[in-house]
Image 1 (spheres, helix red, strand yellow):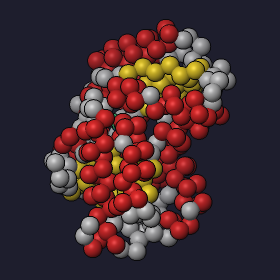
Image 2 (tube, protein in one colour; image 1 turned 180 degrees about the vertical axis):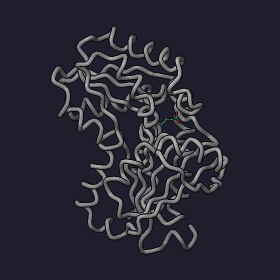
Image 3 (cartoon, helix red, strand yellow; image 1 turned 45 degrees about the vertical axis):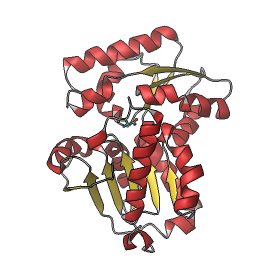
Image 4 (cartoon, helix red, strand yellow; image 1 turned 60 degrees about the vertical axis):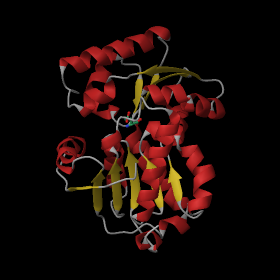
Length: 281
Ligand code: DGL
């Protein structure tokens, strides 16, 4: 680890395989504007959603180490696929060896905690990448917190590419969004809460709303994660003092910065400067 990693305070890291985490970062910046942030999108190796466990774990660990080296003491995996496939191993096996005082948090637990406040029927739908659905991470968290609930999961392999290729407003998006939601709702018409279990999906929100019954509450992760981070920092003053407060965000991508800036502007509703980051492969 280089000397940056040992600075007394540093930015809060926000990681995603690509652009999706920006939907989370945006809400975090709104809720906690006083902190500095370091966003990293591993666009050169995205999407993660169709990759194997081992690969997602290795890529995520490389990203976390890199963010620690850039001075982060706390990293949020703003990616369901990375949270599902890598978070537990990193927390349990890697952090004690790298630095037991640093923390990595994910998006799945806070989302599931919220579900209990929203569903009346206990029939909960989940849309996510094939990797997130296959990991059964949501099933396990739901079973732990709400053993009486039933989770119905629908993998949506086309939704991330629709967003990444800026097709989220197109008739093609209507076709694929309707197709997956019809499949999900036909399995359990009593679903009354739908988790958007992928940070890319808020960009498909207008389409999703069109194709689920009005009785279904849609659970999007940006605000939930921001509230959960605020709560975490309140409960952990020893970490809070290590988060630098300048209100600045650095945006990094492992792909081409201009290309990243182009779609980042859609997620953030404003343009930003982006730098290239080189992770070891
Ligand atoms: N944004 C990521 C998530 O929340 C998925 C994107 C990908 O497949 O890389 O799961």
